[in-house]
Length: 302
Image (cartoon, rainbow, N blue to C red):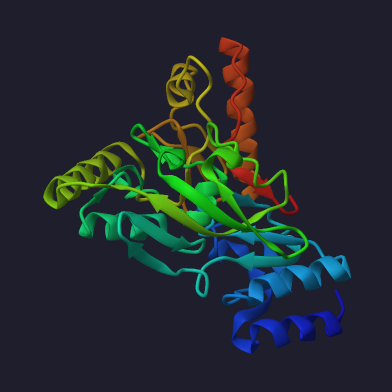
């Protein structure tokens, strides 16, 4: 990556919105990860310009939101990391719809919906990701998921051109969509909700938050549920039954509070977490012939 390319990026996003050798541990909820060669925070239309420049110059780029479903290797990420946070976090209510930029926190959108007496987003109140990441992974909890509320989504194609996709075109399934495989980048989502009683909505959201606090190890850095739910089973129950509650590798541990969570006790490396995930997969498969698939995305150099 030459200096001219860096200068071109800087010209697009501005000097305050670009950093070199930025530690990814600052940008993931696991609080681990080595440096990104370059990290940028593009405002508005600057995003498509950054994508075009990277494509033209053959530089790899990676999109991140809140880093809540991400394990970045200790060696960091080569190329350009584009964080969809500030500058991509527009949010408003239009009648019974929420219009949200991809960098908007999912919890913020859920809270705005509740304040306007709109129901359908209650499940999302405690999910730490962004709208963009939630669409890509069809995020869900407590019986609700994004496919229940998406009206349509605006994406950037690899050539930097914009495209609008209806919910049915996103091929939404359990923790998946067609977005990554097609190389799309979510920029905005329109969510369709239904009018409800504001106090009832807020009370239900409060109940869900209390359940999370009681049952999940929110006091430690983690990426939420580490494994996808295997058909016919629960990942946490399999891990517990395999005798892995509290199992440790370095500073990483299977949570004693909820075995479906891998947590960073404070000094974990990405290598610790990756090895622990592999150990859990191997032991559960050995005992129950079930292969757990990580929900966490692993990127960068390990």
